[in-house]
Length: 199
Image (tube, rainbow, N blue to C red; front, side, top):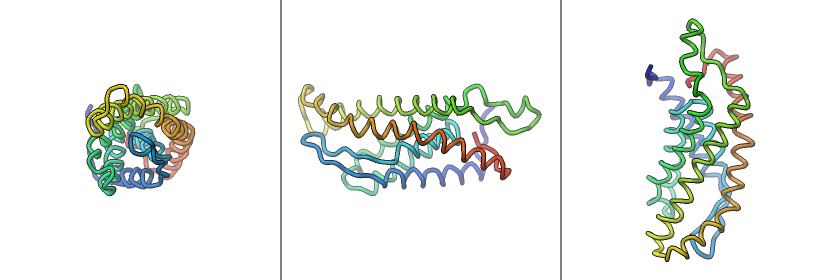
């Protein structure tokens, strides 16, 4: 059964896109000898959170919010479409992993809202979302930033990747540690207030 894109879903998408924009805005940039900059950011937390709260469609919010941040910074403007893909993929995969097998449970439960994923499922979903992002991000750093934009040799382009590892690992680990308990707490509050999950 296809998910209906109603007003509540659109509003939640807009809200989470704004949260993802703000999360990506909160960053500390570090200059690098080659390969531009690297950054410590809260963006991965909010992108994973979008998927954990909304399911696969949360990838749209995470991709849009992060891409909008790129559009506001001339240094990242040309990368906005790639950011939409890699940050969107992070939220999408986290959402699929969190709710796989839970969809349609409301129909089986006579109209009751879908059950919340367990904390373990949230944690695994966050890990899978972050790993997906790493695949997209490091490919972008190598092919787009290294070979295409900077016109480096393949060997030199590979040297960019280890330099980006510390911040990337920090951002990913932070997302895995913070997003699951945050999602569980928000989902509980939503259920208590009668605002059932949109996933």
